[in-house]
Amino acid sequence: MNNVKNVFSIKDLENLSGIKAHTIRIWEKRYNVLQPMRTDTNIRLYDLQSLQKLLNITLLHDYGYKISKIATYSEEKIPTLVREIVTTKNANNHAISDFKVAMMNFDQDMFFKTYDWLITKKTFKEVFMQVFVPLMNELGLLWQTDTITPAHEHFVSYLIKQKLLVNIEQQQKQEITNTHKVFVLSLPMNEIHELGLMYLHYEVLLQGYKTIYLGESMPIDNLPMLKNTFDNITYISYMTVQPDRESVNEYVKTMQKELLGDGTQLWFIGRLVEAIRPEVLGDDCRVFESIPELIDAV
Image 1 (spheres, one colour):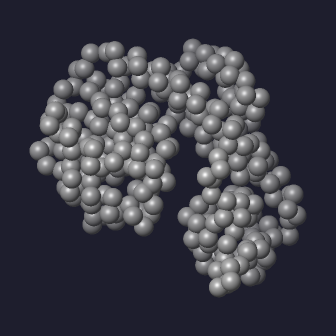
Image 2 (cartoon, one colour):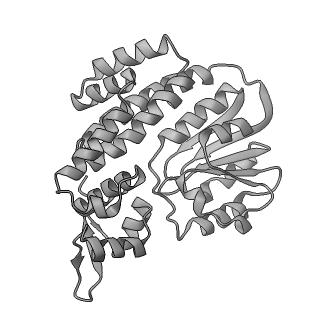
Image 3 (tube, helix red, strand yellow):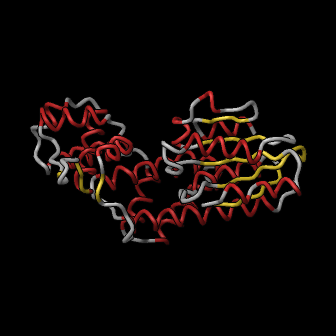
C-alpha cells in the first residue's frame, strides 16, 4: 500500500468527488470547508484527509444538506452524519449487514455462512447484483468515513472473487451453445478493478458463448493475435480508473485501429465511458452505461 496516492490536486478532487474545481474553490473561499496546502507557486494541494472530508460533504450535499449548514458542523459531526446515512440506507438488509460484520472481524467463516444462506434463496446473479454490488458500493462510503481500511476491502473483495471464480468454472464446464461469435474480456493497462469484468464473464458464459478471459492490465497489441484463431470476436473492455479521462478517447481510437474488421466488435463499459466522445465511436463500437444493459445486448 506504499504506492497509494496521498497528495491530490484540485483536479483530482474534481474527478474523485464529481464536484467541479470551480465549486470547490467557492466552498473553500466562502465557507472554509477545506484548507489546502500551497506549493511555492501557489498551487493547491490536498491530503487524504481533505479528500475524505470532501467526499463526505458531497454525500451530505447529495442528501439535501446545504453547504452553508455543513460548514457549521464540527470535523467530528460530518463523518458521524454520513455514518447515520449509511446505516439507515442498509438497515433492512440483513445479508449486507452480516457481510460487513464478517469484513470488520476478518471472519471468513461468517462470510461463507451468510453466502451459503443467501444462495439457498437466490440465484448467483441475484446475490451478485442485489447484495454484492450494493456492498461494494457501500465500502466506498465506509472508507470515506475512515470506518474501514484497505485491508478490510481487500479481504472481502477477495472472498467475492472466490465466489465468482467458482460460478465461472461451473459455467465453463457447460457445452457451448452459441457459436456465432466469441467474447474476449480484458482490462486496460494499469486497470486492476476486476470484479465487474469477472461478473460479465459469468453472464456471457451463462448464455452459452465461448469466452477468452484475459483479465487486468492487458496491452492492446496483445489482442489482435486472437483474430488468427477466432472469427467474429467481440472485445469487452471494462474501464473504471484507466485509462484516465484525458486519454480514454485515444485508447478507444487505438482499439478501433488495431482490432476492427472481419466481423470484430468493440464494447466499452465502466465509469470512464462517460468521457468517451460520441464522434470517436465507429459503427462496430458500443458503449454501455451499466452491466444489465450490456448483458441484454449479449
